[in-house]
Image 1 (tube, rainbow, N blue to C red):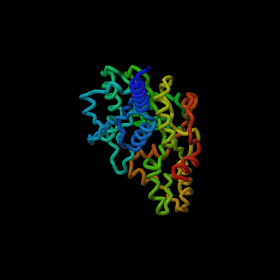
Image 2: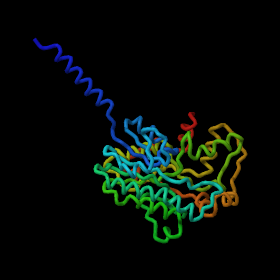
Image 3: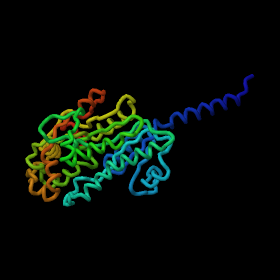
Image 4: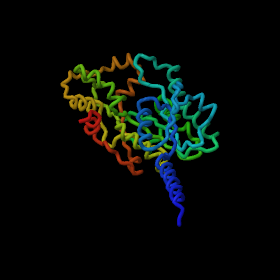
Length: 325
């Protein structure tokens, strides 16, 4: 007769195996700059997708999933990290903060320097991550009235005379010594319900002001936060994906269209306030004002060819979703 205790032992073993399988994660993602608007959303998204997440922050909070840069330099990258996503970056559009050499250096160090540092730390690890994803932006593209895709390569003249093109170029090159798969996602304006550009529109609209920037005719590449999060996950999980991807909606919009649709969705009839160039120049200086007012048209041609499907292509659908309509 078969020992009944053997059946009990088998059940316990099977239960432990099933429990381990259910609790195991898909991987471990290290996020640089994970406490900002995109980082907070990415952390929650990856946890829902059954990933373990560790965040690198400037400030050590005591939370288990947050480390600071000093911890990383001393202890290195954990051997179980499978992907690194760098979102680190000093805010550029800080009003009334002089855009001089000291501030530019701070911006450069926060983006290019952090990416280079991460690359060095990763390269010294025994077990290296499978992929390094850098989240840059579409400011690398010129405001020349053309349509720009991932095939764009800035000329030496562009790099020399345009701070933002030079920043983007150096930013993407900073991880060139990472020995495995690298992805750079150039994002447009990220639209979300808990931060980003729409948060800037929320309060003026609430008091009856529609705030177009300049005449509002400039192209403003944009992406819904859900599409950006899915694109990052797509880049992590698809081993054949590498290089440049444009994280922008296939259907572009102007600044005026985004502002008008947002106020309409809120059922407001605002007095349209066009923020004039003179005010922008006072608040941001000449270089940043030019960046804001000239805009650029960007298409995700390679992103689509790689097989990524955008959930929100139309600006109306994106804003409607974010407002819960």
